Amino acid sequence: MTLTENRLYLFLISAVAAISVLSLSGEIMEPDGALYAGIAKRMVLTGDWINLYVNGNDWLDKPHFTFWVTALSFKLFGISAPAYKLPALLFTFSGAWYTYLLGRSICNKRIGLVSSLIFLTALHLVISNFDVRAEGYLCALIIAAVYHYYKAQQESFWHVVAGSLFAAAAVMTKGMFAVIPVFSGFIIYWILTGQARQLLRARWWAALFMLLLFIVPELYALYTQFDLHPEKVVFGQKAVSGIRFFFIDSQFGRFLNTGPIRGKGDLSFFLHTTLWAFLPWSLLLCTAVFQLFKRRHREGQPQEIIILWTSAAATFLLFSFSRFQLPHYIIVLFPFFAVINAIYLTSLRDRALQIFSYIQNVLFLLVILLLCAIALLSGFKNNYLTAGMMMMVTLLSFIYIKGRNQLMLVARGSLLSAGIMVFLYAFFYPALLRYQAGMTAGQWLRNNHPKTTTAIFSDSNAFAFAFYAGGIPKYLPDTHALDKLLSSRPVNDKLIIYTPASAASLLKEKYGAQVLKSFDHYRITRLKGKFLNAKTRPATLEKYLLLQLN
Image (cartoon, rainbow, N blue to C red; front, side, top):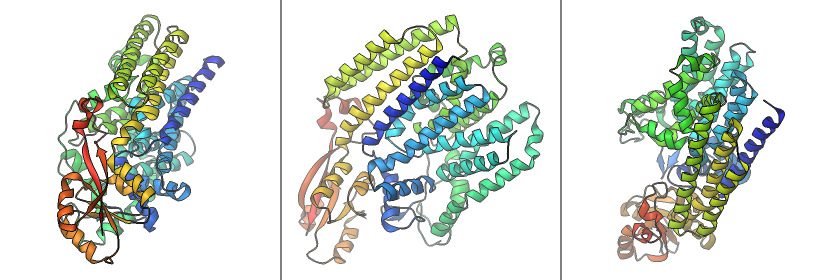
């Protein structure tokens, strides 16, 4: 690897990271992002960092780590969308760093740099930097744990401590499932290479002990909120153990579809999800997987790559056989995919490079044309300017990025991803968020009635309003709850209620509620063609209202 090539990869990584910062300028999307932000907001406003509540009820679904990190960011920078997104973006950058370190350790610096760049430019990671959930944290923590345990095989004991700390944080982010991508690759690798005695080494038992020790804060929080209070009703029943849910029901219940949170499941779900989620690198990944079955291809790879292959395979199969599936789960495998892809990509020569260069050019044009079509069809502000910029990116890529070598292949893929970032962060998502009624209503309320008591009536998923409105809005599932709230308040106090228009007539008739303002709403994380089309969009919109009760 030449010094010039090294600098070019570093430049591309820096440019992509800089463009990623644009994601901080956007607001928070419903449902998950606004839900998590609201939980962390409540932590800061109440000073209660132990109990998790949603709509005033005990909430037992996700562990505490991401909420603690977000609440700390709110304490430092204030309660805002950028403060919510900043920790997740920093974790993404740390995930890229550890992906680089692992690729460099297993192979060389060039593989490390290409791995890091592929990781940062994968489509669903680009999306997750804006629509922040737990997976951005999780993939960074998992790859950090894998790297430190990889180094711990031969080097100092502090790598065992660091690996266990990151693994524990991963467990406190998503549950015990996180140990599978961390440990499964090592166990299978040791067995396949005749190193099964590694399982008996004291350092790995110490790693397990430290992992359990480091998750004690999570166990304490769950025990305090749930196990100490068997009278609480959770998932429709009493005597629900938070610790049991953490170790068993949350993970095995979803996998076997026997727990309180269930799904349908589809064996092929993550196959087609990976095809779009890992763009622009998914076709390379599929080819790399196919080539794995050829002995000639395996002979050129370092033996330790087995750790990555088997860890990714075990986790992918677990996801596929699970009955509860969501697209963003696949993000946790992106660091593994990135290193695997980098090794395969840098092995390409002559004919293979020519084929993939042609495929990438076609893919580049198709994606850009799709983005331009969406921009023009949507009628959003600056849509013609955005479409023109996308076409300019395409023109510049074909003028200045020429040749059929690995560097050009990586550069063009990175440029495509950078163009998608600008399209999403600066144009598409800001336009979509205008139709997130809870956010726009909460912002309007803070600007016009900052000190008024607020409540949410009927809509249990109004998470954006709960975050953007001042204070902690009351949740009122029905008129009985509203009557109870009104009876406890002074007669002359104002109450402003956020509610879907379908429930507003009841409040107008029974309580004489007056309409302050109405807002258009659409669930923007589930886009359909009728909404994207400016001509048919009005028919897809719901109305949400702010009502004032005296």
